[in-house]
Length: 252
View (spheres, rainbow, N blue to C red):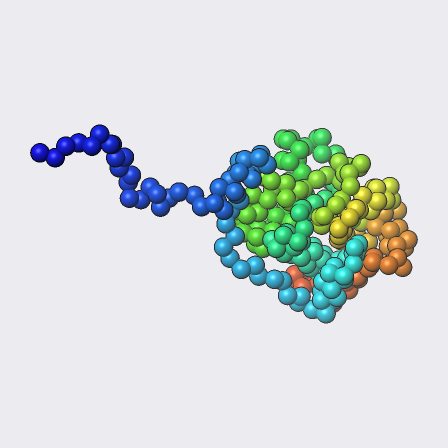
């Protein structure tokens, strides 16, 4: 009769050992644990499709964004100012060439402050950022875009909340800048820090306030090195033929 050696043998299911995390996965999990980020980053398992300018001025704007620290995109609705700027920022964030993208714009055109709107600050500010939402969702994918919002890699912030901050290692997108006051524009521009690019777009002919800070800034800063102003004309409208006809019809 065979004698029991007294040793016990633990039976391991065949598929259990194959599911053990690799060393790289353990390292990633430890990093997420210590960083306080409990939500794993979605897999970016697709090739980022870079934006191609649709006309000569969009190409000039794209080149100006690449090679300058502060860029003003000036022109009417439908010229692609916001689209080019946000697409560039999405590409830089996707390829990890910047740590963060800050989105901001004045809310003067509503005729009332954010405090009068219902909900949390994020909910109050969400309607102002719909143009950015569509562009980033399409460029990054909805899942990764939502992750970036939760992790503050994409950070929508009301203009008034930026006072006292410093912009380092980021891209700042400023939309509807014609409604910034001179004081707001000075405050915004003086936040720029190291490895920061600020892209400011607006239409000086559509300001809802007197003495627009955008017009003032262009006059003061146009000749400073690494600051570029790109102007879009009515012929550069690409949104639609009808959009172009409406813009022209409202020219005095």
